[in-house]
Each structure stands twice: as C-alpha cells, then as structure tokens.
Image 1 (tube, rainbow, N blue to C red):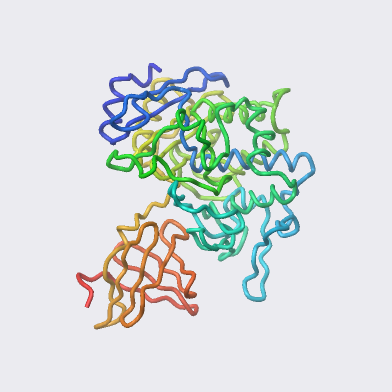
Image 2: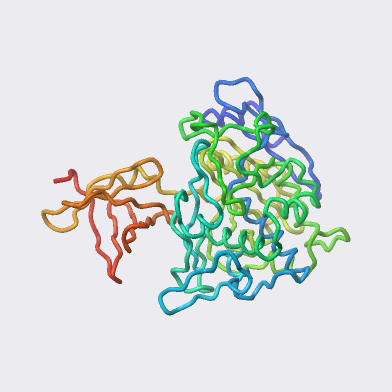
Amino acid sequence: MSACPEALLLERMAHYAIPGAALALIADSEIAAEAGYGVKEAGGDHPVTPATRFQACSISKPVAVLGMLRLVEQGVLDLDADVNEMLMSWRVPPNASWQPRVTLRQIASHSAGLTVGGFPGYTRRAALPTLREILTGSAPANTPGIRVDTLPGIEFRYAGGGTTVLQQVLEDVTGRPFAKLMRELVLDPLGMSRSAYTQPLPNELHAEASTAHGADGSPVDGAWHVYPELAAAGLWTTPGDLARFAVGVQHAAARAPSAILGQELTVSMLTPHSGPASRLGGLDSVGLGLFLGGPWFGHSGGNEGFRCHLVAHRDAGCGLAVMTNGDRGHELIAEVLGAVARDLGWPDWTAAAPAEDDSPTVGLEAVVGAYELRPGVAIEIAQDNDELELTLPGQPPIRFLRMSETDFGSFSVETTLAFDGEEVTLRQNDGELRCRRIDSYT
C-alpha cells in the first residue's frame, strides 16, 4: 500500500505500543490490496499476515444487522413490530406498569432506549453466561440486565445491549443458533471465509489468531477475552473479510444483480435514523447498523486489547478496513485513514475527528477514590477486576458493574452511579446526589 510506507507504519505502531496491524484497501468496489505488519504477539516472531484473525469488536454489530435485514426481506421478521411479539425465551421487561415497545429498527439505529453500552468480555478461564443470563444480568454475567431506561425512538444512545436483544430475536424466530444463521445469511454469501461468530475461539484456530494487548503493549492475560455477546462483539475476522462486507453493501447500493440485499432495505440501511453521533472519519449519524457521514459508511470497534475501523464510500467504490492488536489502535487508525485519504484523493472525505472508541471510554481506575457524600461523611470507591466496589460508612461494600461509558449499576440496590471527572452522581428514589472527589477517606 503506497499510502502506508511500511517503515513509517511500523514506527507509528511502536509509538502507540501496537505489536501488529493489518489493512485491506477497497478500490472500484473490489479488494485492491491486503497487508499485515508487525507480529501477532509482543516479543514473538509470528508475523501478522492478511490471514491473521482479529476480534472485530463492535463491527460485529453491522454484520449482524445485515443478517437481520435479510430476514426482514424474506418476511421472517418485521422491522417495525414490537420485539416482544417475536421473543419467546426472554422479553423486554416492563418498567412498573409501563411496558416499553421496542422495534428492530430502533435497536439497529441505537435509539431503542436500551441499557448496557458495551461489554468487558470474560477471561478465558471464567465461566461464561448464556444469552438469557446476559439479558437478565444473572450470574455469571458481568453486566447488568438489559432493559429500557429512556423513551424509545427519541434519541441516539449506543447500546450493545440492544444488539444482544436482536441476537435473541433472531434465534427465537428461526430456531437456529446465531453463529450458524449468520454464516448462511451473510458470511458465506459475501465470501467472508475467515470469519466466524465463534466464542470461545476453537483451539484449531488459535494459530491464526492475534493476541490482544493493553495500552502499554503487554499481552492481555490469556491472550484475549471471550465475548459470548456474539452479535454485539463476538465476530473473529480479518480486514479483508470486513472489506468484503463493505463491498457487499456497495454492491447493494449500486443495485448489482448479485446484491445481498434489495434496494428498499439497502436505502433504509444507509439513511440516517438517529444521531448525532461521532465516529472516526466524520461519521456523524446512524443508519441501520452502520454509522454514516454523507456518502461514507462504516463502524468502529474496541474489545479488550483490540481496536479496528471500517469505512467505505457508498458510490465511489473506495474504502479501508484496519485492525490492530493494541488498546491504542484508534490513534494509529486515525493517522492511517488520513494518509490513505490524502494520497488516494478520496471524494467527499471529512478529515478524521479525534479517535472514537466503542469500548467503554472511562477506565475503572479513573473512578477509584474517595468522594464527599455530605460534610464529614465520605464514600470510597475501589476497583475489583472488572467491577467497582462502593463502601459507605458502617456498610459492607456494594458491587457496581458498567452499564455504559460513564454509568454503573448494582444488583444489590436500586442505585446507579455516574462518573464525570471529579464527581460521582448517585441516582436513586428519583433523585440525584452529587459527590465531589476528596483527598482521603475518613
């Protein structure tokens, strides 16, 4: 790739402590080039190649939505029906006497008002929850139950929890496992032969997989996290296969005879339904499954130790998929996108905004500390693995789990905790209590 000289790219990878990266370039709605750089694991000698598999992270979502839209086109699903009319093994719960009505269109455009922004994943030694346990927030799930907590259809709020509801809808209506269904609906038709919604990753594919790395470049414990939330974060793939997905969308937009989706639903997929949003490359609104910016479409992704991005032009047939095995990958990706766009003269391109990340943006360590509840009384917040522990004077610790980028909820009490810089806000009994950070716990 002339737009990414290898020596320069490797230098920037080292700057961001990213051991390995891979790219696939789209031109004239075809895969024009694929390349791998660096190594699969820091300190190792196994190179990243175009065949190396990375976690697609949140780019799992638009691929899942395309599968859902194919079932809508076949008359199996209704895009605007209440999902509770299709769900059998779990239902969107009522809020007291009010039963929210949620549709697949709202879920796909992140406007359903559903909770749980992202998922932290599980170590490879941990017990994995079933899909129902994830939806209900039951052990061993490490996130709260999914529910509606804002008015559906009103505004954009990114919700991996919504895509998990979508996964349950597809399984309940078809009676098929999600991974097999997606292979039939999307992966095989688009030639995505190195892709699979397979969690945990089978042993026979470990040699093809990249290790995940933290922000300091050190390997993640156990090599990577496991994401049983398949539709939201569970796809293992390559940049070439992500590019094949984008080319499939381009062909559908061009009404190609072999298009994977008909014109009506393709237009709906590429029409803004909610926003504003902000994603790398000027993507500022949401269609169905995809972020949009004028004629550009795409999606970012961030799991523990992996960062990736896909962007493509609806009409000009160009685009790029980039996957990295480091937590600072979006910073590198922003530079790569800018260089490729300039060198190739991409049309209608908006200069890359600051790197966006679909993984939780507030690290738990940032919340840890003491906060004044009222004069002379403080609470202490500590971190325990992927959870927070809040201690009130005279009470045992209460565990809080991430609900969104900045909000945390508890199974034990009807209280949520929101973090904003130097304050935490406790919300309960329809009220809010702001607590400012203090130097020490007394």
